[in-house]
Image: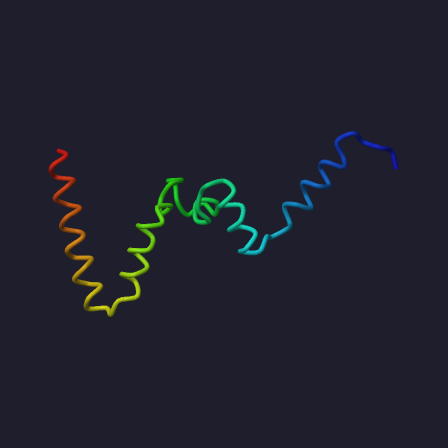
Length: 89
């Protein structure tokens, strides 16, 4: 077999394309790149979405509340967000 200069790179590229990293590897890559797993997976267009740890804690707290409490909190939060957006107009 004749040695082709680009062949090893091509083989590595094809091999890497077939590898599916574990979630832990993806989390580490996201942390190293200062982004989110969702962004790496193409689930989010905004790189900085949900990177604020205080905001994540709040959202996790809300997610753990009973459905009725969650409903009231989100209703109030939606109203406040709408109010701020209207002020900006």
